[in-house]
Image (tube, rainbow, N blue to C red):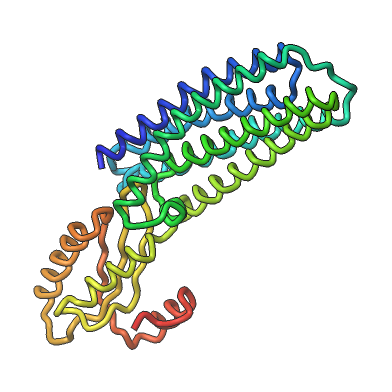
Length: 324
């Protein structure tokens, strides 16, 4: 867990340093060339730099230990700050790109000068962004392989938003650079400012889409997303296989933070067991879940009768069918 946290920090720091340098280069090139697409890309990199600052804040604050006020720890702070990072991408990057694009398209003609400067800066930015993208891609691919998932499956259920945010924003940055290059080149070839403005608008759409994906991911984690279905099945099977348990009546999981999973299980114990046997079984099963499912940090097991009508109705309302 500490190793994964360290790699997430490395990924975020590397991305932040690269984005800051690229933002300065793009801004200078945008002013020199008069290209709206380059200025939009500068805003894109500024937004990405703010994003990395917010992600570093998320990594630091979410690592605080549990206390009396927050007995489950501060893990969900990572999702809050990552949600703000998604808002930053939209507010600082997408909105400026839309403004620059529409101003270029509907405003007066803008003369483009020193296009070669723009091409050089875009090429350098692409090379520098690739370094950050490779690090983020390496981390998400390795973690996906460890969980025996495809890259898309991993990104869908990941509980650490930092590498996902960096990977998606770096992917968007590379695509945005290609769009800016196309806008710059078509403007130079045709003399029409429409192409430059269209590239800026396309960059805005791209950033808005990435912000939406990241915002939705962190929203789901903040309001209490369950674990990966494969993990839930593993927890269910482990409990159901216990000799003391006759049936798993209800099972709920929720991420308390990255690599922190809460498990609440309602089970029907063998009626012949005494209270002491049930207590020992609960302790043994909690330990087994922590060992077999590495992310499990909190376990609550409640003995219930499987025939209780109110409980059955609650399970049916949540899942549409009983677990037993």
